Length: 334
Image 1 (tube, one colour):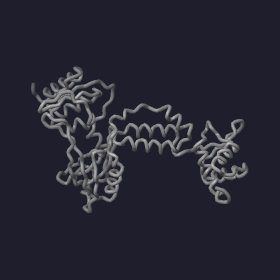
Image 2: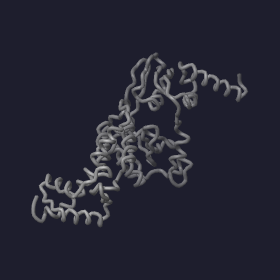
Image 3: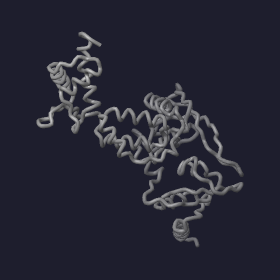
Image 4: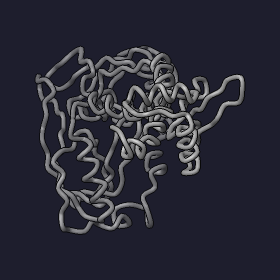
């Protein structure tokens, strides 16, 4: 590239070089900028470099000039600072509903806002994330986009929903269900993304895992008013909804073994993942082994009544047994 056209784009190349190769600890002198421009086939007069930097500053870019003895320029404010990029990368890496491929793409986009030195620091500080439970549904972006469009338009959608079931003596299997629902909101909790919606057959809210949804079609029919199917009169209150529908767990995880009836398989899979280890099977029950925190888990187990029985650890079994006894006493039984 040469001549006047090269001169016009030089300012963009200077910004690109500062974005890629400079930060507070790595300022670039005019001579260093000139050398990088030369690598790109552009002329590099020092006076023109100063002029172009002034132009970028006038436009609003936060380009900072270091005082002596550490002379040079660097890009100050970025789309994401290093700590912000760290938080975003960790969130993307740990989100189970984002596939491995999309995870890599998103992380790369986040890293583009950093200098090469900051990217290296980010990777050195990488927190280990277990990717074994990463979703494989590569159409999830299109599903999210279609659902958001329908929510904004106030229209119902028809969708396919994949359920996992377990029958007498069989391994878990997939079942495709078709629903026509009124969509209201998308919420993210416990590493899963959910659609909050209403099935016209019922007068309440239901939530569906986004990663199990496919083939979303927006319908001409208007969604049911939220107030008809919930206590929310104006807009959906995600915080209130989550406080009543999901349990949050804390504490150190331990190995738990729970014997369950077949009819709660989907519930168990939602809590522990579709690939949870099944250690024993009968025609009517399956027993899982998984790592989980005891704190709060007892309440989650008890809400399913006799469909779940704690096998181990003894500490958790005793907690459930004692709470069951206390409940009997509270009702004047036993």
